Image 1 (cartoon, rainbow, N blue to C red):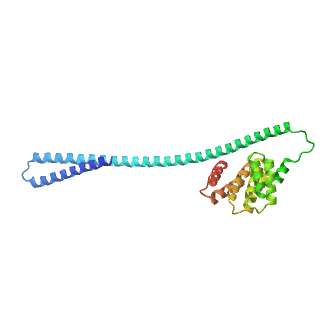
Image 2: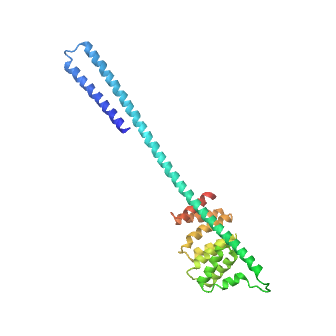
Amino acid sequence: MYMMIRKQRFVAARAVLALAAAVVLTVTLGACATKGDLRDLQTEIRALAARQDTLLSQLRRQALSTQDSVRTQSDQIFDFRGEITRQMRDIARALSTIEALAGQNQTAIAGVRDQLANLRTVASAPPRTVAPDSTEALVQGGGDPEGLYRTATDQMNRGSLNTARAAFEEFVSRYANHDLAADAHYNLADILFQQESFEEALAAFQEVQVRFPIHARVRDARYRSGLVQIAMGDLEAAEETLELVVNTYPGTIVAEFAAEKLDEIR
């Protein structure tokens, strides 16, 4: 397109030069030229001028067409970038869903295995008149802080939420200042949410923010607080909480998730 425009400009320039030469020739030879010659020359000059006007009009149309083409390509590039961004967001959301489903499947499988193991134990064991509370035995068997925390997380991952809850409650009671205390509080809040004890879960997530203000768990605890408020139907409070996450942690995955939740509830 660019070479074609240059070529047409060159042709137009040649036409102008020819026109100028004709004028000069007319002035120079005017004394010896006949009226017929002058008329022929005037006709040729008019034809050259008309051709020049035609070429200029073509150049204008081609320039406008080129501008429209560039504008269309720019719009297509902008739309393409927007589509790529939307696809990346959809992929991130799909990955989160897959991870959540994988966790649920593992929890369900672990629960089935526990039930089968319990059935085998009951079938093979002799009758007992007094049986100790299994939850209490597991909690008391934790021993050191790390052992108790491992016991709690193992039970949580296996889907034994009541046992895990008791173990985490015991941990935060015994070892309030331990390095794992913030994680224990967060996991306890997560269990409460899964058990649909929403008021207790909200209080537990907020306690993470108050007791451990600079801990890495605070960011997730704020986001989860917003989810609990949505589950409780308090959308106004949830919107305020999620906006705080978006503004406090820009550019993070949790901020992106919070923004998506805001779009859903607005």
